[in-house]
Image 1 (tube, rainbow, N blue to C red):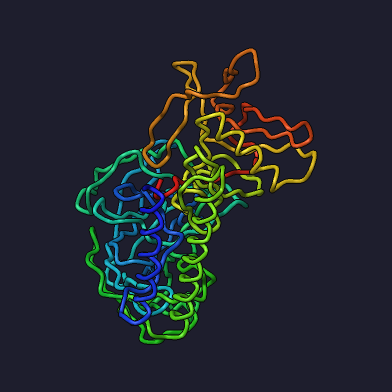
Image 2 (cartoon, one colour):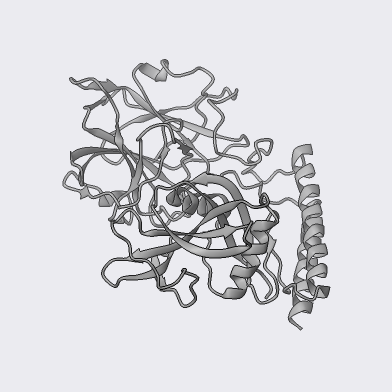
Length: 426
């Protein structure tokens, strides 16, 4: 019966996509690289000063790139010490998407220029009522410019006052907003690239200063390749007009993907070891009894980067191993994607808890811990961490010996990673 419901649901989806070709619908998702689960928190680039001049400097405007209509604020936070930052300034914007891939908003500060010092840092914020923080970011693995969330959550823009201070979270991310938030030193942001045409709405705000908005009616190429849209050929269409050739091509691809899903489902139903569930395109379903889908990346990263890539790129979770049957499937799954006789490590969400002396699974989306009921630590017993740096763990696959086991790792080690999602229609 469950299998019949699955097929019915997928066929309904296929006909829904077919009908969408002849009826107006919302445009394709504009942002694929926004920051999920960041609503209410302020994201601060704690190690990147806004100026390197000892005497400070003055900005006459700020240019912001946004991908959705969620309201945002560009903020300035002053470093008090390594663990404390004090609120100084913000400008509040409510973007309106246009039928292009990116939206720039230029806030004119000529009336009240903004003076910053080497102690000032950039912060970006969106209220708790937003669905995401939609200012695009880029990964920066070449420097020590790390992004931190505030430990405190704020309901809306009015929560920030001159006495507000925050402490950065323990987790740091090698990401930066420097291609999406740009401060101007000349009137009308004439010092920025002319190709970075500002396109956007009248902002609401700012929170602590008055400002005007400069809008450009010229829509040319806008800035360096950004993270707003994926694939890059897809255009954002907030007006709901979807009758252009690119969008029609996109719908055909969606329909082909749906047919592939149905084919996969049929194979699962009639395969002796396949579960009656479906997976997103690119993911591999676990065998019968394993209710997850997996996608493997043979790219060596630190553990925190693996967590972030799974969450932001696929709305998925880094690998968590709950049963021996799941681990046996992963052993075969890795072997089919690896070189013979290789020994490979894949990050898991397993972490060590010093107060209890036990290992647990960490869920980044809810920031909660779950006890490890199943384990595959080599005998005689699970290892204990010796510092706050070797509290992470990996699944080790020895393809030559055809063995699998867990190993304690330094969180800054470089390992491969696997993202997982639950199957649907199980």
